[in-house]
Image (cartoon, rainbow, N blue to C red):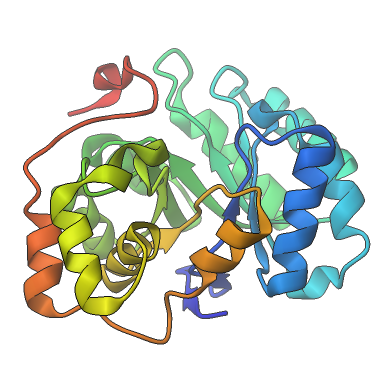
Length: 270
């Protein structure tokens, strides 16, 4: 599994399994399958309510080889709540550290300095290795970077050909922040796209593979959700081939701006 080095100094696998919407046995089966196939990066969140299931799975594998990302809910970003919620996540995940801890959503009612102060303590106490943010616009990301006493490693946002946030991606690169693309397949909305179908013929790949490869070549981390063994395996086959610059540009030029997550996101944008 290929990885990218974070500003914190830790390595982050560029492909992970997303677990939003996966609970119970379905979650356990999907995560177990992914780890057996060679995934090492699992993305979850307190809001997903599947920490316990993931904890049951990862205790059966070598924890040192895994990279676990989770997130604190945007409603609990005051200092004491962050510390309390992180301890809860650690207990549920049955681990003594989290590789990457993110603010799930911005919250304008709580000073971000307070949240970041708690994050700093978690890193100092070795409960968290790297910190980051999620669903932060360019302006909010720069504010977080400015006010954090330790490096912001990641900004996790919705990113796919129907929401190609080039300006945000370039800003992340300038700030040495890795962009993680969630819902990289737009929850299936892109799978019937005519242009993407045409391009896949050149590479003898699926649309899912084409889009994930497009994102990886743009130097992002991708965390597609998949529950079947076939799809989990399919999503892994994105490293042994490349998309031409011409086709990269064709995909990037798709003229759509379509969010599939949280229609009220505009309140957080610049």
